[in-house]
Image (tube, rainbow, N blue to C red):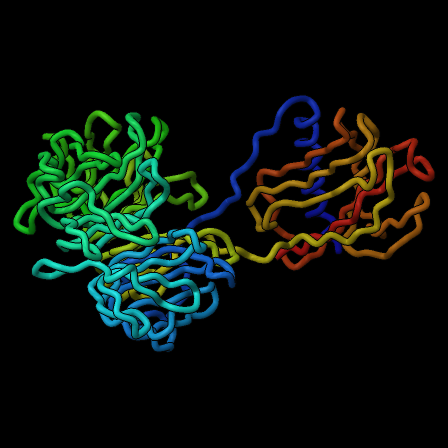
Length: 523
């Protein structure tokens, strides 16, 4: 008990000092202390092959993460090239598809949101569906007769864009027809029929994204092409609904493996939203930009020193340190630090995600499985720091809250005063107690105890008995008290503490209102 009293006294001193700061002026909030890491999630029964595409979709049973690629099982369940992860278990989408899946997105064709998959398959759920198909949560269906033509027809990218005539699904890949329409490598599906985007492109489209660069909404397309609609575009161009145009002089000098744009994303680094393009190139707009570059609507610029090898996936995510752009691919460094196939760009600097993965990252998506948003990375890798292969999770682990509300309040002028606690109560970490809905500018006492014996008090019940400490405080003009601490003290591990406020309040039964009691179980 002496150990607990001493530690509680140290908490009390900290609370009193910081309370005075609160009442005098301002207290700056503390970060939540989250340290993102690779979180063991899927091993030993993840997916048994490469993941090429990831997205989130709610089929009516709740949001879930969907993975597409070249695999036959997920979590031990037979799942042909596509599967659903609901946060706890894997399930198949019917009998899946009979080839690799390279792209996933969600689109509402007027009959409700559905999941669309693209790749090099010919059937989905046993139904003929050439390279693109729709999953409504129960069954697969084709988009007319799909896309075809060319030496190796495939769909590589999917995106939703409204050209002014309503949202539609845009499909990019390697093909020469969509349905019965001639469409060179890119086409539009409005829910009932296909249409071409002018004369299309002269080579494969690998990535699509809707972006307004200041001249109006447009669909940006990246790939291996050199012209779009007859316009010189050098691997990247945009479609405004009626015509194609270039984004500067595009990308060049990709090396022996060719030049291409394989990933597109929109990110605001603090200077406004911009289009980021990743792929296989070393110059953008004629200037050096190693495998990733930024388009601000008028010119290209490098993203720091760039990356030493190809970028295949881009995604914006906030892992607790602020929004950032995440890149996946085959790269190993930015020239100064090891990055191992996945990296974070905060607008100024590149940083690693722990030890990264052993080989390429093909796809990135953000999903909340109920424990908070996390970044999921899919690819051909077989190991990651969290022990997962082909699909891995990056984020903050969430521990059970140490705070429990115990009720037992007594109403005053503003109703029942509410006491809440924030923080994980680990030694050295920040947190706070907050009282709201109390009488304004009123004397108050915070009672603290190490056990709880309910005791009648002023017409209510005080749960913080026997009282170890009673802190004399005062509410602010709004009837609030904020008591933050920068570093929770050591010496309390395993203890339970009880907190409850008494506030002078003429509207209360006997002139004193009570907040709810709060128990803090120190880990």
